[in-house]
Amino acid sequence: MKPDLLFVLLALLWTAFVVPGSAVADDLSGHLRLLALDQRTGDASVPSQSYGFSQCRCVWHHDLDSSGGLEAAGSVTLIRHNRFLADTEVSSSRIVDLTDRQEVDDQHTLLFDFDRLNLRFQMSQQEFCIGRQTAGFGRITLTSPLDLIAPFAPDALVSDIRPGIDALRWQYFLPGNQSLQAMGVFGEKPADHSYLLSYEALGSSVDVLLVGGSLSGRPVCGYGVAGQWHGLGIKGEVCHYHRSPREQGRQDLHRHFTQAGVEVDGQLAQGLVLAVEYFYNGVGSRRPQDAPELWQSAFYQQQRGYLTGCHYLLGRLGYECHPLVQLGTLWIWNLDDRSLLLQPTLHASLADDLSLDFFVAIGWGHRSSSAYPASEFGGRGPASALLVSCFF
Image (cartoon, rainbow, N blue to C red; front, side, top):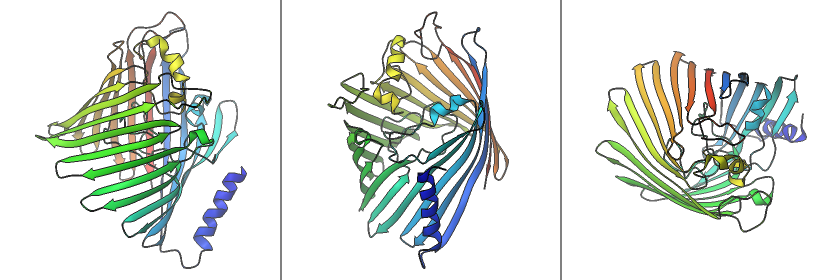
């Protein structure tokens, strides 16, 4: 076992059993999860692939007193097929690598990871949190321009657990449902560090969010509003970036770029809910041929961007056909190259703590006859996945 992981285990044992009189309550939860995915390529000459993982994750909350606590969470994952390791590299928002990999054979890897390890305490109207934690901005649910630090891909199959980041966060609660927040997020190198300030005001009709600072060396500022109008939820967000002036190897392709989104959601009928978003991705390109170069740029390598076009229409339609069964469909339409990704889903509650999710993903668009893509989703073959989760 790596020395970093051994140090973490010793620190947890010391906090739980050595600190005298600190324990007020412990809470242990987690899940067992199995994912199997079959991916067919857009090229008929290339065989389909199947891969997946089996995972056990535990979350431990330890209250020190009425105004503080310790949170730790870790997982053990058996990964089948090394393609999954592309999603488990050290994040640019983690200063310490608390991940350990053990190769079982050519097709299986055992992965140990601590994704939460933080200390939180409150004083009067202030809250402090230090360590590996979660943080997110923005209200748009499909893809949020203000989700700066560790965003999910809009078509992610599993998005209930946000990636942990190494940060120091201070929040001050003002009268009238207002708050100020300052956050430092730390990566392996000084160029990966981020420093952000935010202001949030929750009004009776409109919520306002302002964010600014430095994101891995690039100046950033953003703002968002959210409100209701005749039963519809309306949210708007804009975020402006300026490329870092320092030369750090990989760079963003654009010196200035903006991301913006407008989302409308509401209930169409009993049990039928619709959300639609127009998303402008200024870091992308209207030419599908530029996608390989975009994936090698800093913004995408830091896992802050997932779509490579500029103009998108996204939507999610959900229907509760039974209290235990929900049907849904996600679509992502690239308005530049007219390609479309459609992802129908089924969620079923099999028991109080047992659920099943079934996903299908289908891509439409121009297929390439060369090394460069002709559209974003046209080269994607159909995929299907089955996810079984047991919570405790």
